[in-house]
Image (tube, rainbow, N blue to C red):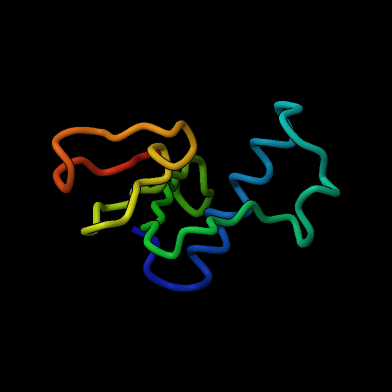
Length: 88
């Protein structure tokens, strides 16, 4: 789990690099070279190979009366409500 602000920045930068490398977006779409969550609930993870960050992901845990990011994006409700987390 990315516990420090530095580790979170590593995760955001790795996401940026992956998105741009695959042509899903342009570098100018991400000022500062990071792809950051707008959802403050997201818990960031970084996978390391020695000192090299090689993987990243995030989990958003459910909260009462708040939709998960996937629910918001697709206009759906995932059941059972309050039990499922959103992972990417």
